Amino acid sequence: MIKDRHRPFLRWGITIFLVFVCCILFFFCILRFQELKALVGTIFQILSPIIWGIVIAYLLWPIVQRIKLFLLPRLPSFIKTEKRRKNVSLGLGIAGALALMLFVIVVLISMVLPELINTVMTLVNNFSAYVTYVQNIENSLNDMLQNNPQMQGMVHTAFDSLAGFLSNWMQNDLLSQVNVIVTGLTSGVIGFGRFILNFVIGIIVSIYVFVSKETFAGQSKKILYAVFKPEQANVILDVARHSDKIFGGFISGKILDSLIIGILCFLCLSILKMPYTVLVSVVVGVTNVIPFFGPFIGAIPSAFLILVVNPQQCLIFLIFILILQQVDGNIIGPAILGDSTGLSSFWVIFSILIGGGLFGFAGMILGVPVCGVAYYIFKRLVEAGLERRRYPTDTEAYSEAGAVIDPQTGRLVPFQSLETEAAATPAADTADSQEHAVKENND
Image 1 (cartoon, rainbow, N blue to C red):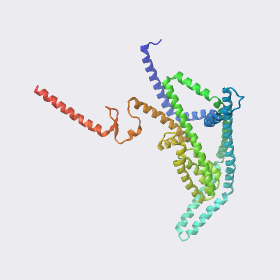
Image 2: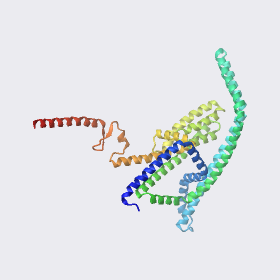
Image 3: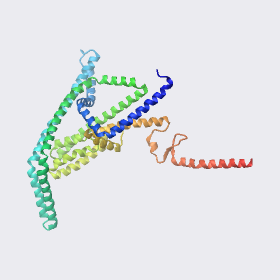
Image 4: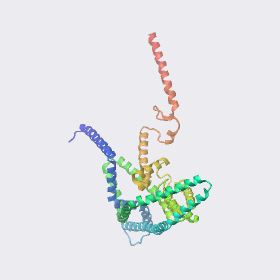
């Protein structure tokens, strides 16, 4: 048995050992970042059906809960036990939520797929028309520049360079890359099939997650209270609840916001008689899930599709997207999301760029709530440190120009008052020392 006087030394030794281990692991992660990223990607690929199941269950749980609470008091009287009534209402809620999700997916596919096929066929069939259009532009420029041979020669040179570049690209680069393109299409088809399989398995997994949600929550609390002290476990649970509030509020709010933006885009484009209305509206609505940059990311391919049909309508579409983004950013988005993450605009952009750079499209969506959770945890740590020192925790108090904490009172005061006090203190000390010296001389 370890004696009580040796326990502090054992704790210090374990702490030092863990610090060294963490430092070694940290530097190893930095040096082998690409290998670790590939390993994490492989693990996520293996666990993708389970991840899909958890994501589906998390997104559909509010719908399941609403259906459950609606049906619970309306179930037939022959279901007598309370447990059985809850199980039946839960089962009906799961079935209703999954049916609603599949219905939305089928409707979107039935709306988008025919127009997508039509778009591709139109681009292929009108390729010769696009070439003729370019030639007409060249002829028009020649007619306009008949009186300026120098400019006419520059236009001819530019078009000849463009034609030569396209011819060289088609003969050398495109033909040599046919094998790569075919391989990419094959891997894309295989990846799409794997995605469908993982999604179907994820739906099955989500059913088990729905059924076992309360059990998982109870087991998690049981482990927390077994490992940590009650105060620490309560803090962890509070952070977990707040994190769920941030994630749930942000994701559900962005989905609703994107749905509204997609419907508004469809109505306005229909009024403006734009081509590919359904396809463009779906692209703009889906990419709007990404904060700030979403409408512009969706506008780039949509503007290209409209450009090949009518350049004038493409310009009108770009102006419309700018107006729509302003309406969403200043009216619709704040009304739905509010301050769900607690982040300023700078940190939202920062989290989008970092998340997108590391994890692509999913990182751009999840980067904001993840950063919001990290911000909430860091805020709690800072406020706890200030409260222990009995300092004010209101940020506005520290934002005042020249406000500093007086070490004597622990209160915020103007910095000039501390300078005045510091300047007065040496003078007082000098006067006291002079008086003391006079007394010594008299003695």
